[in-house]
Image (cartoon, rainbow, N blue to C red; front, top):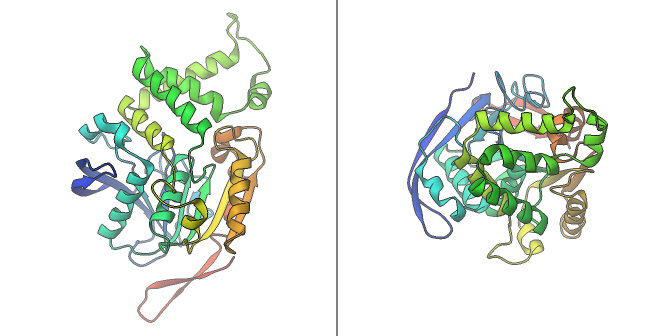
Length: 338
């Protein structure tokens, strides 16, 4: 099992000028990151750096002989500051409304520098992790060969911002904030069609609808494993994705990105709408050749990136289809096979 490691930051400056001290935690899976192509994975809202192995939340995608093959790659995952993983004391979370997705990307970028990693094979992330992937690509246009945002976009739309605002209100005013916020979130992580297929208005013996008990179960599970401060922080990061903030327009920003951009969207996603991703793809294709898009077909909405792992693996395979060779210095080099 990969151990949790730390990088100390004294007086890291947020975009708004506030300075904070923190420990950036991370885990590495697979091959040594000094000698092999490195994949940086950015976790989703309630996720963390434990993507593989025991309790790995992305074991269907990352591991030995999986599409992101730990026999071939070094896989690096930073924990978003304030996500609570590892029970680190993070007093800076009281300033959570001052953080942005760009701050997280800047911190991850500096973390890579501290680890002496100056080039990546791929930056990949889903949901809020996909937004951070976009932010890193805009911040360092030459950093990776591929960027793969999944169920995400380069900006938080008014719809995303509105739902994050409701989440923040619940988190700050409910008597059971974690549970109640999760109940609300599950209604836009899934779809009406998904609920109908799963529950079909069925009731338990005491007259409680199955959908009600299912939602309650998800609320209780999150309440038992997540911190209130972590939910507030991650919700704030989700709300603030925007690679154009303080810069020029979208095309001016992305035309500098040298990476192959491979967008993966979900046809039924109610949070990051598929139409928004397709519009992004069309805009990108007008100025950039190395752009591709794939779509997961599912009734399960935003959560399909965790559910439809066979489809996701198929869509990812061209990115991670490489052959590893050794040069005279026994350093790994790779041949891309798009």
